[in-house]
Image (cartoon, rainbow, N blue to C red; front, side):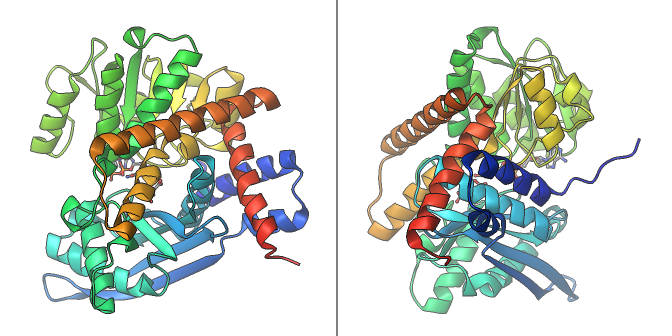
Length: 417
Ligand SMILES: NC(=O)C1=CN([C@@H]2O[C@H](COP(=O)(O)OP(=O)(O)OC[C@H]3O[C@@H](n4cnc5c(N)ncnc54)[C@H](O)[C@@H]3O)[C@@H](O)[C@H]2O)C=CC1
Ligand SMILES: O=C(O)CCC(=O)C(=O)O
């Protein structure tokens, strides 16, 4: 079967164009918002443990900075490309606007396979990449954070590298750091906590009772594994889980804590006792009520969208649904809570971390979670209202709110003649 290569940047631009058309934005405004503001490509050498020098390529793209400093994660993966980073940066712009936090959008990435690198190689590569992009990043200009295959330790190395060049500690240059160097309580769980808030709200709107619902989660990293736990906390039965090696299924339910322990001990979910092994594509089509893609882009496509059984899709990953799949799911009456809303909990607590670092005044976890819950609730309700008013799905509702806010800031600043 021929597989379409789907460029995430084309998807991101088409989603924007749809909203721009509905909002009646001028051609000039559309041209400004369609393009990233800045793009940096860096090629840099790293000495590997065997003494060889390898060249790596990385990117940092700032899509828009009209509502505040650029903000967005850094991804390490062999699949990273400039177009992927452009798409992820654009989605960050809308995400920050939809939850009303004062940031623009950015994203970074390095083409590498961190699973094949030693810790020392990873540290040298991270520090060199941080140095290369230090001409863009800074606490007032562009504040990175974790994304796929990066974690608090990687954030700690970037914070340290940037601070070494300045001669004093600058924790606010990056978020998602360990607590010991200015990280925030609650950041590790924040994306999944946001996913939990919107899942609860969407279930209620659809009249679905959590205790009667089965959930399937693709991806078992920071977002997916914690989302599985928190969705189970809502009362849903988690019946399917997966990581890069494949998926596990038990229609009677999987104990998420056992899965977490098993995955930590075995490096993968495969072979989890009491489960049947499924492929990642089979996983998406399992019988369930709630499907949570929490891995990577382009997972729900025109090839599988007709076979998705869930009534509710919560996009914990960025860009998991292609344009064609979005139309198919919409036509089939499947509710999709879009990425720019569903996974905005992470950047929201990153905002809290940045504020705490700037003020050198740290908040308790309860306060952070309460503020996060309020922002996610309020944003979900605003998106739902907009969708109802305009008779559009939640994705377009979220885009209408977000793009209008960014366009307003752009207009007020008068950055074009
Ligand atoms: N970490 C964060 O705070 C945020 C992450 N996101 C998005 O959530 C998604 C997941 O990110 P993280 O959990 O941070 O990454 P992670 O690196 O912690 O985990 C990624 C998970 O996806 C799995 N995976 C990778 N390739 C896969 C494939 N081809 N099929 C199935 N599973 C695969 C990995 O095995 C791993 O379990 C990404 O789309 C990311 O952009 C969105 C908002 C914030
Ligand atoms: O926490 C952040 O600043 C951004 C996290 C991220 O990369 C995302 O929301 O996709």
